[in-house]
Image (tube, rainbow, N blue to C red; front, side, top):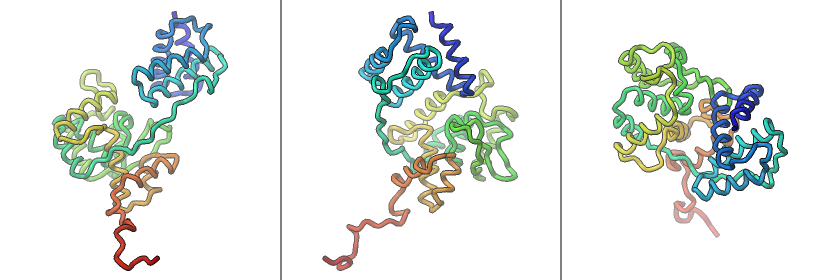
Amino acid sequence: MYDEYLRQLDEAGKIRNLKERSISCYRNYVSYFLNYVKKAPSDLTCQDVRNFLLAKKEDGLKATTLNLYNSAIRFFYRNVLHILWDDITVPRMIIEHKLPTVLTADEVERLLDATEDLKYKAMFATMYSSGMRVSEVIHLHYDDISRTNMQIHVRDTKNRMDRYTILSKRNLDLLTEYWFRKGRPKGILFPNKFTGQYLTVGTLEQVMRRSAAEAELPKGVSPHSLRHSFASHLMEAGVEQRHIQALLGHRDPKSTEVYLHVSNKTIMGIRSPFDREEGGCNG
């Protein structure tokens, strides 16, 4: 019933040069919405979207997920159905900005020790030592690792901006061990052993949960926590924020500023005014 509309959605995404992953996500979200409302697309209204999102919120979906539905359906309405979108009827939900989960250096070591599979251990180490996103590590190729310059070329990024990040000596040793033991892959650096294609984010998340539980780490630890830990530990070491921003690939400096809130105040050299010496303040 909806196949032709979903085909048009694919076409609308391609003509705007959206990434295939984005198009696929849009298709999945829109398909779920259409199967939920069970109406002819020509009869759809913004009130249908409002009712759908409210029902999903009652089911317990988070605001971040609901906003992804919002974006996908909005794209579908505007570019396929040509229905006027009403931001008052279907507003984006306010996101709660919680501080990221950051591991201590000792916790990172425990996590790596608890990860038995060398491939995943190398991937986790790469995320922590270079600050790469999960999706970026998944899409690494052999030629992206530069031993000469001790750099990693990060392609296929979230914001479509290629960048270089640092390659640590210890991480290079681990990658080298992995490469020799896993058949010297020349294309995709961390291929799925069954299909030879890219791994999924979900796969890494499952491995992370097992390793975190084995290492007795706090709840809420995810692969992205390693990127957060990289940035926070660099900031604590006194690396300038603009350099950290470049390594992370942040366009907006505000995205990097969050690590000021999670870095250790003692290492940062900040002293609370409540710890002032007696007689140090008058009045």
